Image (tube, rainbow, N blue to C red; front, side, top):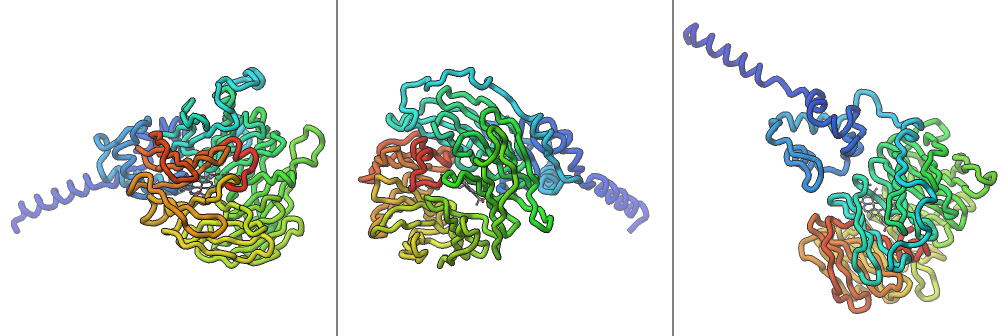
Length: 499
Ligand code: DHE
């Protein structure tokens, strides 16, 4: 090789090295993302972009979102602005923890509150003709909307924009007038269903699991993954009343898996993700007008239980450990009273109950196995194992139908729901609303006559079936409808739906 050629090769290598400098992801974030998602990645007009917020997004989906944007939202695609290497680097950056752990203190919570409508300033009666107790709220995850559906005419009466990524059931006040939503980003929204208006909002955390409303309608408790907190709000105004960092007796922090209202006990129940404890927080005993103390009664176990089902009296919890082992906890006694013969990954949180042979039974789907387990609630024995098309998420019924409907959304048969006779425990029918497309989550009209099923796709639909003949009655196009919630069934704590 001549000297000249050698020099040429060297300078080419230097030039290649210079152009191959790795992208500066933090700088790219500041230039391209920070104005919508916040300089601290905690969210602003766009959602938070922390590892916890992105957990549910597959790597390819995150890349595609940065590259192509999200249809029907303000998220534009960056394919024309950023190279593939820049996009890769940004995705890796977003999946990494920020240099200092993000905080969300009481002062941040307070500062985030937005009052859209002054309490007491809206009419105290429904501003529409539909039966307010037979309304449904349908959460459409595609472009983050909620549809208000008249349960008699089965026609929408209103549709509104929600916060980004609602999850879990919205919770109604007992009279059905107000409904509280939690978004995965921590936003709690209070909606006046009689006036079809969002009245107040507050950001209670950075990554929230769910909320519970006390039976007396006075308190909202929010459970967070990030930070590890419980947040108590005044249900009337959404003002912050108390917060508590969740720790074990040894000081170890824990995420909150979920919070529940145990109405007959006058308390909230808190499921914990990292502690082998369940907490009970009474809300009725305090001084008149005073916010309940977040001073939990701790019930300790030998294993973490983060998914569970309550019996109708809220005396017993049926809980599943991470290994899938099931146990029954007596909340009065504060200890385990029985083991449950369950395997796979029972999804007890989606369980329902009904009467069979004079006994209350409970049925739970399974996230790993294609079967529904049916358990006698008196002796805690398994009285039936119903083979289904595959692992599923939800099972649903109603006091006035002889059938329970279940999906197989975690399996190749995700497009089909099977219908089970609650007495014989035999599968007696099935529906496939749209072949090849995910169908799941059933809710009944207040009289139990119609079953509403979600086709959970961007160009999806809400499909209404006659609950006795399993014939399709109508379908309403919707943008990735997920859960739907009937005011009557939820406020009367129907045994056919989760609470
Ligand atoms: Fe949910 C409720 C936890 C994934 C749709 N889900 C709940 C509740 C909990 C929970 C604790 C009860 C809270 C409540 O209603 O107040 N869900 C979890 C998980 O841990 C899990 C497996 C993983 C996660 O990312 O959190 C999970 N859930 C999903 C989904 O993938 C679903 C199918 C679609 C989605 O929205 O992301 C989903 N979850 C639902 C729905 C409810 C729910 C529709 C309310 C059920 C009801 O009828 O009340």
